[in-house]
Length: 163
Length: 405
Image (cartoon, rainbow over the protein chains, first blue to last red):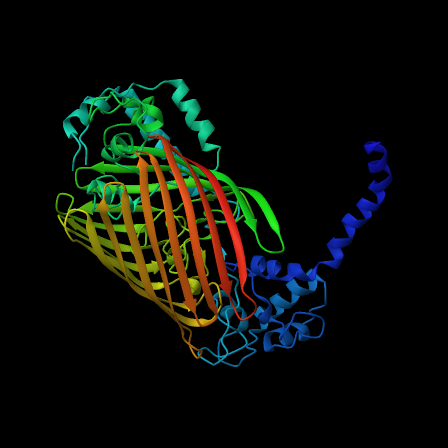
């Protein structure tokens, strides 16, 4: 019975599984920018959007520069190309003397001169030392286990002093 | 202290040498989610300082061998009334004494988990909860002191994350390196350290801990600290450079946190705390140049054998650049009655008052230390909060098993 229902629904599931890859491309933009520019975390919406993020709100100075350099809704390739163009041209959307891409990499706001009122963080807070890692943790764990093994080889302790 | 160090030394020295079963148990336990504890009510046994039982001179975290012994002598229920005073079983050691680390190395595995019920007028939810699952290690070698932990968190515990997955992350709550400059009286240390502030109570969700950001679960930050402990005085001051496990840098807080506790007789202390930090952006509200302050008093008193009273009150000031300041107060009083050794009943009242939030809460808790390594605990919490709209009342019941192996 279960197998029968699954068999009937599977084509629809496959179809639905394909759909989000396109329909939800824009939410991936922050992740693409993070990866392309090697940022410590993903940008927040106010980097490009004014107000609630939706079509027609990409009007910040940086967002406008990206659109002028070919950014297309839902198209990640156009996002990469626009970032590359801004970096190559040294575009400085807020006119503070520092190119947008350099500001982003430094965690600064390419939409506003430093110290101007209305400053908001443009990179999301992210916890953890790495997204895939555990390298440090694993090393620490191995060190502890090694120390324990060393202690065991020496056999039982003969004395122990309370603190 | 009332214990017999010589007897304790002899008892622990009998801890058996470990073999494969110990390693196997360790590996199995490492696969489980895991915390070590802080019990300010140990003042009933005239412990006003923390450094005798904990490697951290301000309490919480991994126990010293002496502290492990007290788990049996003073903390846990005594099932054999005839056992000799001061005699400690070798099983109080790491993993019940079947694994024997070298003398300079302390190890512990801490697990805290159970089930959580949340009930509001409109919803009731029950879910399993894993709060702590840590392997802890500490080195005490001549003047050198070092302590660290690594563990697993199935969810939450954000400030302590080592990895950045949505769930099932590695966590490191504390890791620091220190030097003992005066035979246990003066410790200078650097690393990720629990902020010294107020009562170091185990109820990490109590408002005095969560609102001040000083809870023992995730309140640690990186910095440099100096702790002073002597007969009658406990002082701890930390310069904070931020939580380096949070990025980008502009969310990290810089500032200080400190506490000073004075013993008033054998069974009472009075302390003051102060904390001031500033981050370029507050990690919760995203407001710029966020100044966070908390300053307060705390006290512990054991007026008679089974009863301990504790309290803390802190003034709060949150001030973003160009925004309105948020001035408030948070407080807690707690009465702990130890009916028989190992069985505690706690009553706790708490209050939180800020311009946008007013809350009162009452806790009724039962903790049963049925073994030196194990505790069963039930906390029922009723909280009423008001934040602009109609008041909300929520009941929380947490049942948990705590293991400290």
